Image (cartoon, rainbow, N blue to C red; front, top):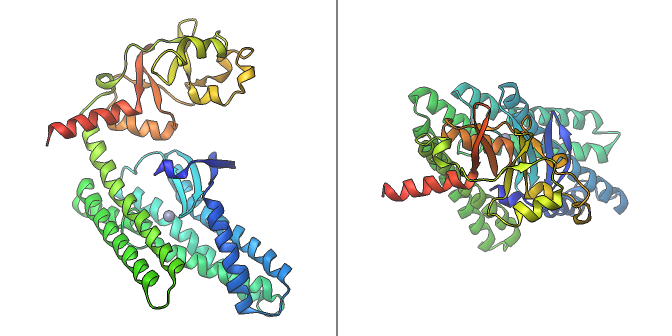
Length: 378
Ligand SMILES: [Zn+2]
């Protein structure tokens, strides 16, 4: 799913969380703006000038994304409050997604994080509805906009409370099952099946609208696409649970790569490229400063530097230090390591035993081992 969010543009940080816009968001922006300017506003008050309508439509589209952002921020702030890191929030074609570092450790925590989003949307609904009532007479354009935003936020709250995983309501449902049965795996299985069932209904509904007598192809396409998206996410989250079950059986040192060369921090970036990146199959290397591990550097950082500056830049300045990405312990469990990868947002992490660097672990090595274990058990 993360792949679907690329390429994206970071617009800033809130509460230490990176806020990104996915490129495909532009489609929704135009669609929302168009619907408002050509459909909704003229239907409410036909007499206003085109310039006012379009200005309102742009404002409406911006507030729409602002509302989605507030929803995701609410999830994130509660997660942070529980000590779960949130790397970033991305707004994309089907709404928003907060990259929450790991799953909640108790049903109560999960329910609190899940319910925060719809609760925030509900508060916004009330806020915009009140603004609508206050502004209704004297300021009709603002009032119509507020009414629309109240409806949008209300729909956001209601839609997300549908009890199918991965929707927020599905998470609350899972937390409930989890607390009753004490079985996280089973709770995930059931709630993701409900999520898949709901998604299939949505796809079916979309198709009947699209091919129906009204001929509303576009109007039907949208729910069908959202349905596909939810179906995949529901199936994916079940796969993730199975994955982490498998990974509980392995430790980092079983899977890590031991023969990764470490790089002296004093090299130039060009020397690093010539001697390491372009020569070996690894994309990220541990960096040593006087035999002391100071962090890692990889393809990503090198590519962020203009090519003509590689010669004159010392590698140390590109290093992602250990504070940003604490190394893995050799004895750490595989499922915990996988969570550490989502938290860090990198493809490889150094592995230490005490103070000593003993290898590198790549995300793909963890996934590879699960694949093999899966084949062996069939
Ligand atoms: Zn939500």
